[in-house]
Amino acid sequence: MSNKLKVAYYLLRFPQLTETFILREMILLRQLGLDVRVFSLTPPLPSSVMHQEVQEMMPYVHYSPFLLSARLLQAQCRFLLRSPAKYMRALFRAIWQTWPEPAALARVLIAFPKSVYFAQQVQDLHMDHIHAHFAWVNGIAAQIAADLIGVTFSLHLHAWELFARNQESVRRQLELATRIVTVSEYHRQYIANLCPRWLPEDIRVVHYGLDPAEFTPAHVPAKDGQVRIISVGSLLEKKGHEYLIDACAQLAEKGYRFHCSIVGSGSLQGALQARIDRYQLQEHVSLLGAKNQADVQNLYRQSDIFVLACVVAQSGDRDGMPNVLLEAMAMELAVVTTPVTGIPELVHDGENGLLAPERDAQALANKIELLIKDQDLRHELGKRGRQTVLAEYDIRQTAAQLAAVFQEIHPQ
Image (cartoon, rainbow, N blue to C red; front, side, top):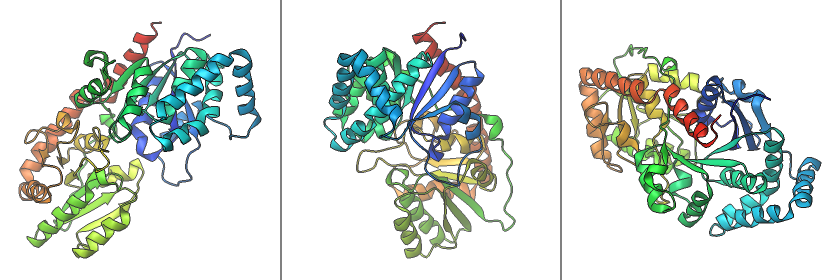
């Protein structure tokens, strides 16, 4: 039997276009010598937009069978016959964790047979540990495996599942994990305040990471002299795209020559397009839809300024530390963003980027205007931004830090 540490990544769905950072992380962990396998509760959505690196992980992906399949039934019988008390304990604890959220409870009950099946797979494959990104249904699936077979598991906390969900439900999930990992100091303090079981020093902070070699600066100047602005993020409230459009309206009114491209898809597409039309910004602002990583990188190269106007949504949802900020900074784009959650730990106003208060289109326009007028400032902030990524957010470093967390739990 191999001596490699075997880590099962529990994901709700694999692959997902918006979870590129998890894909990169798993690939690097495998390169570091860990046997990382993916256990996906649901199949991928039909889509023509997918990152090329997905194929590198596909040989190590396990999907759950359909709910009425014989394999799922066999897994239930296996645990019911061998350990009925453990089976019922796992079921009741899954219900307990989501009781305050009826919609989440329904999802967990639907996923329970799949979670039991995955527990069987994890046991048969002799996996040492389960790592679940997000405190959500896949995290509860990890808890079910822990109850059934005694495997350890860690939760990796990010944004929506921490900030926007029912806080009692989140606290219950946090209480049961073997280890908690998160992405910023802001998150560490938030988790410690939410769940007193976890002291701040016991919560591991592992930043997002990327490979700087994949995001090398190669700026392509605009032939028409326009300043090109890019924003990348799902068309959701927390991304603050409406404030970027409002800022663009102010810049257009002042007569600046620029074009802003917004990359992403989501429920606000219609509302955002209507906002563009209302301001008559069709020549200045474009919604480009979802793009794969190669296309996004090409857009970075053709851009001068990156803007992400993050806000805390009315639901409480917010970004953690958007990975696209790392990408843009690695490409030496001057970035303008807002001091939401962990972002100020990455972007320091006036040093490696610019910060504007959230939900303040005027302040955002002023920051963008500074960069439109001052090419030297754009270049200087861009260079410092890349230096920040090289020093603190190289995925080789962050993957090694995460591997150390796993090895701390299971010394080889």
